Amino acid sequence: MTTGIRDKVAILGMGCTKFGERWDSSATQLINEAFNECISDAGIDSSEIDAAWLGTCMENIHLGRSAVPLSTALRLGNVPVTRVENYCATGTEAFRGAVYAVASGAAQIALAMGVEKLKDTGYGGLPVFSVGTFDDQWWPNVTAPGTFALLANAYAARHRIAPGDLRRAMAHVSVKSHTNGLLSPKAHIHKPITEEQVIAAPAIAEPLGLYDCCGVSDGAACAIVTTPDVAAALHGADRAVSVRAIQLAVSNGSEAGFDDWDASHFATTRIASGRAYEEAGIRAPATELDLTEVHDCFSITELVTMEDLELSPIGRAVHDILDGNFDAEGRLPCQIDGGLKCFGHPIGASGLRMIYELYLQLSERAGERQLSNARLGLTHNLGGFPFQNVCSVTILGRP
Image (cartoon, rainbow, N blue to C red; front, side, top):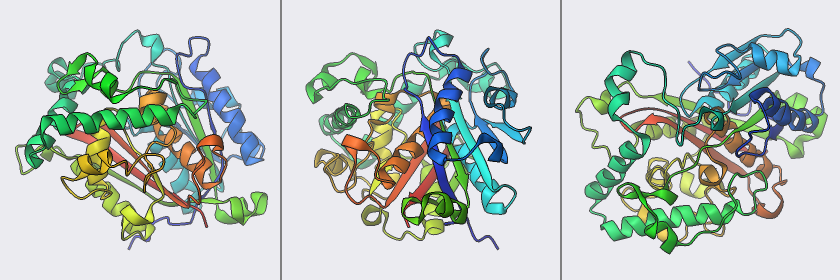
């Protein structure tokens, strides 16, 4: 019988690069930038790391296909190093590997690193994958904005949401994140916008406009995890940030198989979050959680995710968003650092960047954007497309 990993692992230290158009830095330089902050924060020597995980999604000239570049970039002590990839949940997948290693007793101190260099590819959006069986079926006729626009239209039809109300709620999501991002020095974009600007922006895939889509950037983020006893001995129990749950749900293809799924929500998010809440002992997430970082690749994704995570009643997220419930001053702040909308989405780094913000908030080191008495937070990654995707949910807490 499984018992879960609740409070068996603590974060010892974290680091994050500045996200953006990092033409001046290679992937290994970004790795070192994030790691230098992380190892300093952890207060240990790199020789004490027992194992490491590298999360990077796209094959590129910077890193190739193996985990060796992480070991060589950091001169790790010939420890096991594993490369992982799981669509946009890649960074959290690296974190999951490190956490499970510590929870199982296979390692006392483990490193998770996520990194991606996307600007060098020359694409305005995410670059295409190499051709394979899956790609031959889907990629020629599929774009990310197009499929998430279908999600928006399906959601509106399912819940009989007036187009104008949906559009205003989506605009509010983007305005809220841009406002929050102004207080995040490491964000790619620091630019306030208005709902009028969002609604008047050029259409990308109706009803998604330019400001409904997150950007492309370069970046890296990392975490060093250990047992609660080791963390308490090094930093004291008061600073400890413990891992309450990590759950992963991967589509089995049923969403694309003409079953009961109506394209208005994410089945994997509902499954992963339900498992995570059970593992963490959370019964009423809307009242027990203090903040969230969710996968806002598009404004509609954040809107729908509020319902999938049980933070809004089904069909009511539009109203909760317009009421400001998820604003910085609302009952449950979402994307307090600006989210993907302001950081961009270097795929391998995004999941760990979200965890980094929770870590800062829970340890009361978030500076100007610090929330009062934040004790329990959630991150959510969604990779792939609405009809075939992977979802990862992580819950962190203070003692």
